[in-house]
Amino acid sequence: VSYPGSGERLAWRIIEALTGSVVGDDWNLSNKGYHVTTLKTSYPHNEGIWSWGDSFYDANIIFLVRSPRWAIPSYFDIKSELAFSNGFEDSKNRVRFTYTSRPAIYKWNRWVIANRGENFREQLEKWGWMIDFYMNNGRRAIYADGSSIIDAHCRPENEIIHSCIPKAIISYERLGSTDKLIGEAETMKLANAMVEGRENEVPMADRMDWGCGYDKVIDRRKQEPRWDSTTRKGQSETRRKYTSSSLGEINAELIRLITTYSDASTGWDVDPLANDLVSILAEYRAEIDAELRAIARAGAA
Picture 1 (cartoon, rainbow, N blue to C red):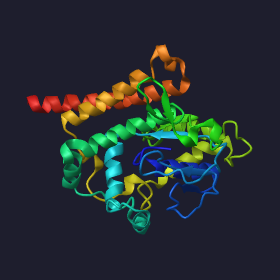
Picture 2: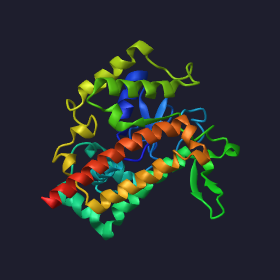
Picture 3: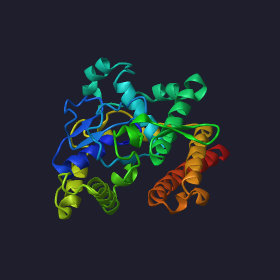
Picture 4: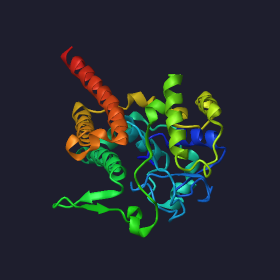
């Protein structure tokens, strides 16, 4: 599970290397169906759909997270490759264009500031909302009295899935790190979460080969077309800039999430999943702080 643009393609290639099984998708754009070991989705984001009913009742959810600083531009790339399609058929007809090219920088600049920044602001809100949704077992919203609106798919009485709480939070940045030790460690965390409690149900390579599976995937990056976001043609994603105001909004959302999931009064401070999430978010915040300082120095020069 992930916000769209968070590196799902890299993750599912690693999963396929570990399991020897294909990964399906919620819209079945890959034509692999739903009778698969693993399925990727961006639900409840509007780009995702809960299309598999209760066929993954016993599944272990794994949440892939990427810094919104980069996930939102990557989402924009996908939308551009799909020509901002609003329907399934249009999207399916343009699947062959995904992971092929990045639009011109001026198009990103125009999109991110459109409607006084509402495009960006809406996606930043959805990025954070998806984290809240899964950390709170499918919570869609909170009433004024503090009670929660829980997604129908996640309610125990509906018997659709045993839990919407992830078994692990996986960092895209760590998973795709140029530091082999960091990448392999995140791969181990991913693999362990997949088989936890399901050792006899999930086909998995021998543990001794997990690192090898990861290495093969990383070695093929930038060597094959449409492998993942790194194979896109066009100007580097590092040229996608934000204003200091927008970076400040990203920083504020990161602070909100870090504060929420390290709160001792609610018990999050001793929750292992929350601890891992906060550790990842702290890395994102450090990157945003560094970028804000660089902008400030450039302005003072």
